[in-house]
Length: 453
Image (cartoon, rainbow, N blue to C red; front, top):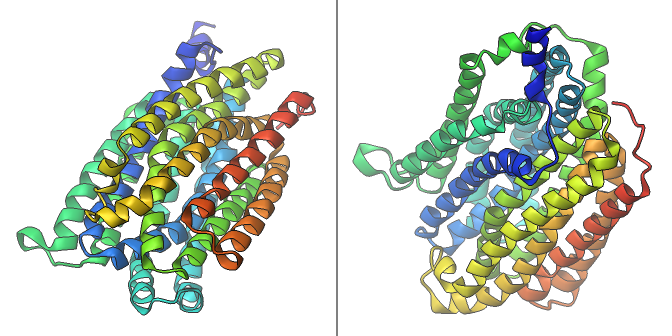
């Protein structure tokens, strides 16, 4: 009896602020690190000129299409693992993990196939700048080689968060960051005898860093003997029922993320058509969202895991109060970062360009982006609570409504009316407020109660 207690007791979560921070802060650090990698890439690439910085924005968003597909898979998996943790069924976590490995590798293979077959044709059709086209195509053909490592890394993260071990995430991300920054410096500029690969050097550095992170995260799993405790690799034979459950939960989330990032890719394509400077400024704004998102999505991931765990414990009456607590913390942290950005906007912008004209054009956009970030801090928490309930089809419906409004807005404002960057980035206000209101009303309706996954 005592062995069962020690095996399952630490799988349960409470609803206190301390428990929320205990889970969210390591995830936040884990998510901040790849954003540091992305920002570092862009800081180095900005020294190659505004064309390289703009191309980094396009390729970054394109790669995110596949990265977020994997994220959708793992969000669904994380909710399932957290539910089994709340139900105190550790063996079921191992069974889910084994099936998810095959699904993740299949997703990675599909992403690589699509990129090599269609990316060049797609970018040739939608981009105007010949220099941006050339650099973006070559970059992506290297960058996409990191997908298998990225998906396995995400899978390891989903396991650690879903099993209430998020504190261990930081080690892999720290190693990844150090490797990425070092190799950026060596490969982009050719220091210490390394080849000067320029723009493509950032792609090579990122692939090696992702491979290193995947190795570290699975080494942690072995070192902590989680593979024994949860039977992670005992159930590797394909199981149609479990694979179907994972796919059923994750497929709407994959589509949700794909719709979101495709809409953002449309945004960048429309911006690129207006000129290289607006594209470079928008790439800088993506860095702002990246830094803010590291905190925001950490609390969102916490919402997914904790709400699912609490439901698994049969504590449905505590769900709304838990979501509100997580939202408050998410909003507080995001407000603090936004305050720093708005008090010292030019300091941040000058990391990417020393031009005072560039900074003058970018500062007003930061104000708009900050408003969107505050809405994002709340919306992602409620949206991920919907994920945790198991009704991921409603997640997709929410995304469809928000993306439809977003797409209409950006086409009118950027392509038809040409109202400028401040108005263009106002699309974030519309998008996140739509997600927030729809997610909030669904949770408040109570229609999720009693759903089994």
